[in-house]
Length: 266
Length: 272
Image (tube, rainbow over all chains, first blue to last red; front, side, top):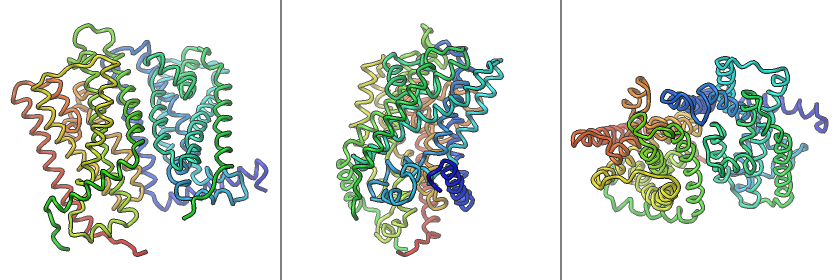
């Protein structure tokens, strides 16, 4: 029954429910997790506010446009956070402590088994909430009137952004199959992803290239934002290819890692 | 409980063993460096864009060079403040290993302090200095006056003490919750903001500025930077910055000591 899509979905819902039950037992922990992210993204929003209390525009972007972009960046980040946070555990300790084998002996796909342990991870809720508020509020302030096509594409752009975040995380977490732990590398790329919270036009050309074609975080925020704000599709048309290639690269590395995995005995 | 031994000699082994375990993971320094450089680059790009068109001093009396110096040195100080005390204390409390350390005739907070000193030194030399050199090569920075550098050094030392206390208190959250990770994330964000790492505190609007002045975190970056960039008025101005740091340093040390005693007296560790 676990082989069909419906079966998978049922299993995911069930396992997510188990996770939520665990949260109900530790309510303070739940509040701390999502609260911590709420504090961080809240302060990032305040930083943008302070910047624009001194100047009317930065690199051609107005206050509400930057907030809109920040909201666009937070939505895919939060969505990814909600489902794939267990990858941090993979990079941190699952290989190092020899605990990874338990995902291999379950009758489902190992990647699904791994991720299912933290489905509906609440830490992402803070990001999703702030992102949604920012996009809706600043969109209204800008008098944005999306076309039917833009309305239809917007959710897909969030999903594609989340898939890019997921791919980068999976790629760097899978390195731990070779290096035992890859948490520092994952921390570094996460820090790099913070660049995506501000307009790409702020940065030096080399950094822009890095964020577009090497670690493609530009496609999680900047490309959707300029499309929704200015109907600029220059970067957006690369989005399907970039998302697909990122996923393929990450999954390929994950598979190679899986096939060479040997349990560290202890 | 016995009175712990406070002679420094007893704590020396912890400092040297801390250094040894640190040098086993040398790649950590590279990763810390890249992460810190990326973190500084975000704020530097953002704020340089704000000061891009002005020829004279812009908001808050900053020039492009001086605001860059402020943000880069704030990041360097943040690197020096990453002393791992918060994660290690939290982890020892969470796992119950704390019981073993309490058996020793030494003060646990002082053991932690001794163990984090080499971490601070290594971070300063192996990450902080290269970071400063890197940014100095890429963007124009302000060269401080010698007297300001002399004032900055003791101020930076005090900021290290305050950072230790803040991290110790964060780690002690492990006594009340198992999600110390969330507490640490929140602390990191709050400290980064109210120390001045994201926005120079002089640029904050009224109420936020007042809040930043009340909180102890400005002693961690904004205080030393006020001295380094000569943004104070006369001897009294410099003394006020150092006095604020001293007062918070002493206050936080007392708070740590009091909370530590209270926490240990109600601690229960299950056997296993």
